[in-house]
Amino acid sequence: MGAKATTPAIDLTVGERTVRVSNPDRVYFPAHGWTKLDLATYYLAVGDGIVRALRERPCMLHRFPEGLAGEKVHQKRIPHGAPPWLQTVRLHFPRWNRTADELCVTELASVIWAVQMSTVEFHPWNVRRADVDRPDEWRIDLDPMPEAGFDRVRVVAGVAREVLDELGIVGYPKTSGGNGLHIYVRIVPEWEFADVRRAALAFAREVERRLPGDATTTWWRKDRDPRHVFIDYNQNARDHTIAAAYSVRGVPDGTVSTPIRWDEITDVDPRSLTLATVPARYAALGDLHARIDDTAYRLDTLLEWADRDERDGAATPPEPETDANR
Image (cartoon, rainbow, N blue to C red; front, side):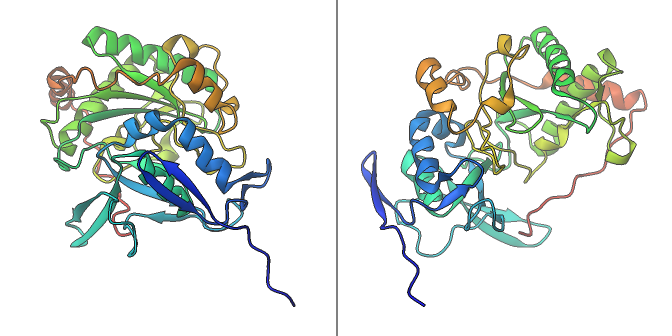
């Protein structure tokens, strides 16, 4: 048998760097024939947006070395032989007494390097490397249960915005790239993970009180109404990550976790936002999260709500499991 033909590597100029992409014609998304080069080209098209979403944050990489048809690898540690200009941050995981040097994006070239390493999804922490113990981002994750369609997510998102408005806080929504919706808020990096999670739970309970037939904060999945939207406050716990704004998702249609305007929630079709369609949207609208860093908000009121709920007998949910041992 003859040797299998391979497509020559190509060099991409990314800012002041040159990043070599091997096997550019390898198909990553078989349903559409989208290749590794298509993936790199997508991230180049949304460059400022993906860098803003990842900048200075520890980042776990979801890699697909053989494309979506092969195994998915969750990679925390940067491999030996990475280019010397690549930035990392060292994280310590006390439970396992381990450390990991994770990618810390500071420029677009590091995103394209990750694509060269077969990364499809980027999952950053909600901290910056200057202080990896105090989040600067509060994440509101609206996660529909199996019988809750996106129309119910729209309803819960509307009430979440109502509560944010009452708090005087501006949130920045994005599709999850799946069935849900995320809302991000920049916060003053004054509190550690446990308090940010308490604040997130207090917010979620307020939304649940206003929408008892649509939203839930019930801890155990088996106990949740399958028609409800779970407001997942656990996404603010240490070592929990979700796909960044502009991250492609490792699903057959290559959907993208896409920033949207609040007024789009009523009619947006998350399935139409893919690596093939988002570049034109980005060229027309720019980065809808471009001003997310303008203002950092405080959590004092939400922590007062948490104290009130606990005095009133609200159960304290257990700490969530982490995947720090990967």
